[in-house]
Image (cartoon, rainbow, N blue to C red; front, side, top):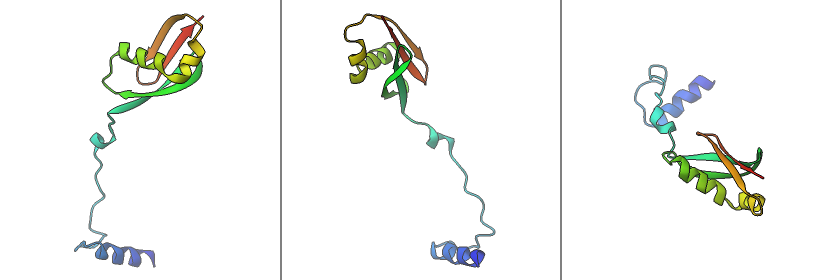
Length: 97
């Protein structure tokens, strides 16, 4: 029953040849690429926020964005930032004391 229904729907969609002889759709890897990436921001190893930045952003700008995130600011407000570790494409860890 289902092959018959699929064939009828295929014809309704405007295709002239049978669904049996048409090929599988091809995929385009370029469509999967994104211009923006999401990074997790940690303070002393605990997740405190997320930021979305362009893929081509430099490390210094990533550090600035991570430190300026609102929830991260709450956890580093009265502390000194010792180090900012950026793991490309994954996360930013802000070490404070």
